[in-house]
Image (tube, rainbow, N blue to C red; front, side):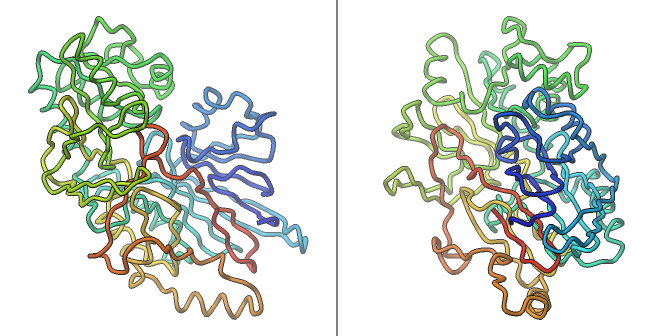
Length: 431
């Protein structure tokens, strides 16, 4: 770690080149440090480079290295310990997670490594097929030695419909409530396609908060101001920060006028009030859910995300509009690449599963481990392998999904993802 050459989604210093997959908060820790970003060149997509100054004004623009999807760049790095030159070619691949999101394929003296970041390649999506072709073309027949995989939903029970299908379900819910105000919980970046679909299908404007409108315009969306507005009087459909969409806020809004809330996410959202307590009598979004409190804010459940949308609470709906790959898509991705080894980039999610638990048969781990052992005799290679989780069952059928409440309504992943890539003869550590 101290002799790192390349860091991805990890910005604590100590490397010679840095890569940002996308601009969601859990992937940018360290960019907002006091004094601004000064540690080294920062590679990202042109879209991310355009948005960065609005989120992190202290970033030195001269250090930004925009890299378009499909493009490659060569890095000439130096090993701090030996002084030897290390050559790396980096290719950017569309991740289709949110605007500007990228995967990074590293090849050269480090071997061949792919860092997916957050991604979703739906099996029926033409853009996903094009992205897969771009990745295979860049590999040119090479095997991925180490795959850093988005394992947010790496569980066989989590198979979501394609985003366009869920978007239409959301439109139908809004149509079924013609006399209601509609509140939709969204992030500061992402789900723009969903909001555009709603606007076009219902022929209505959508309210967003001012900072969100700035982001939309920086993305080149709605330059004529025909779709999004900050005037509440012009529309009954509002997109709000998802942490602000709670049972308590919906109760308050319904004292003024009839209002429904919609939470589009792959996570089976559990609603709570501002005091962090679950509302009594919470109804599940699918008939198959069975919830019971286990103390200390932990909920265990069986979840059926393919069930038709149902009322989650009196005024609220939760639908599986996911921008992370579901299990079937992860399995297809693994079958396509068949890497030597795979490491999950999410160390804690609401349903943590080490991806090798389900996909070891699609990896060449034994051969890769032998190769590493031969190169690193006498060295500790444990950092290369994902730590075995003590929590959970031993078989997929026995394993339950766990949802842990955090400080807000969002069930957030632990904010420690990213990887540093060291010298070829050093183990690879994941933070």
